[in-house]
Image (cartoon, rainbow, N blue to C red; front, side, top):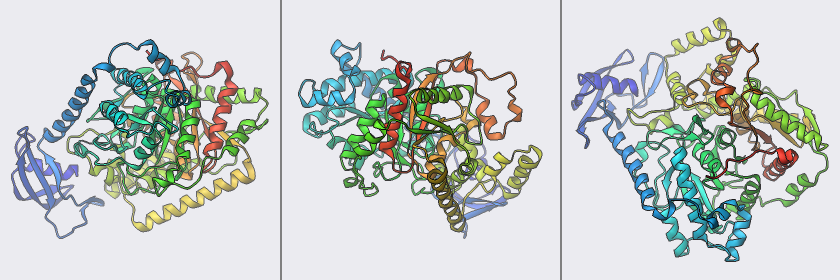
Length: 638
């Protein structure tokens, strides 16, 4: 697409001149092609061209071995990207105006608001149902906190607080439900009537939803109050949440670092104290990386346990590694209560894709009461060994469990975890990145990691072959070469083969767990390193093996924050050599600096088998209980 746009703009003479309408001959990737150009002006005065290929081949353009999709209605702007800038400014101004209009939500917290902020969700629900506290008072407290979090971290997108006051007054919210009066934050992709779900793409600005999505209807029926939506990365394929529409979200512990992605806005908001419960989505770690980076709790549910219908996505139709919406919270107790409340609402009555599995108290209580649990320690994903900070957090949790009398064993013999990263990466991007690129306007910034994936997908095959040969045999890096090999759009035949591999891989994990490991749950790092600095995804875009594995095989996994980076305890040893690492590991460790990271959160990941949400939540509680007074300390609410 970029080559076609560049060729058309080049034919116009220079980037600042208007594109001439009509059929033109342009050179694209070494070949000459006919394109139809319809010129026009946006309100900023720059030229616009709607470009389509004037070719008898309606499917693709041959570009020397690569295949570019036929471009229909692709808007190529001459240099300035006027519509893109206009729509970004429109949304930012709209957000600023909405915040300014909330005059009652500015200023210091009152004593009663402090009391609200200090109470767990379950207690607040009881207060609402007993009419001890009014829902509007809870909204005021958390509305104030959310605006403070926005000022500090830029975590919010759609500000819905003004609309919430109307919902509380007109009966839209059920105050008898299990979440009565509780503000809930939503990842921007969730559909709420009257508000956009841009996903950070300017092309999606102005497409306000006419009705609430099934998940939002369920929340309101449960008594929850959806009060803000939160930031995410353009493409939704990054551990950094940034885009041109809303800007970049920063980590509340250190503004130079990412709050995570793709649900990074939620991570920042909850860690700061701007909310207690929220909902994100996870396709490769998107509710777990933000929890690890920002210091909160999250649960990646198995597919079919949590509703997801009615939400926007950057890759509709992608089912090679399905995405799942899941809960994120400020505390462990709130995570369990929130999950039980949502499942208790029978979400299968709202969304056809949800399994009709009620909350299973017997499973949860069984793990909570079991005297001796067998816990498996999984130390590495086989691609990137964990950093000293993540090793220390894992050891701290394991030692605490041992001290409680639990059986803690080192795991081995599991299926090759590198295969999971290689296979999941190709399944997730089997369209050659066409879909997430299709929403992007010319001149629109894209996450550097996603940009690399898209760029490499359409390199001519001979260039790919030469580069892969160099990586594998000259650099002697079979790990990176294996991921790159075959990277690009897949035919139906190729996709089916990948799916067959996925199912066989799942079967091997199931057999290993049942016949060899025989553990109650697994304890493993959520990532090789703590939070990454801004723009580090240019190097660390494949550093997701610790989370991506569980998406591929659809196992339930939760995050428990354990400690903070210590510049002395977590420094790399003198013997460490970046040059000796494979390409994926090198990209992650390029940005590991214990001194600069001092104070950032570090978590562990608790993993159960498929559809074991109750079991994993109970195991997470046992981990935190084992830590006792040495458990993770949350950020204080300013």
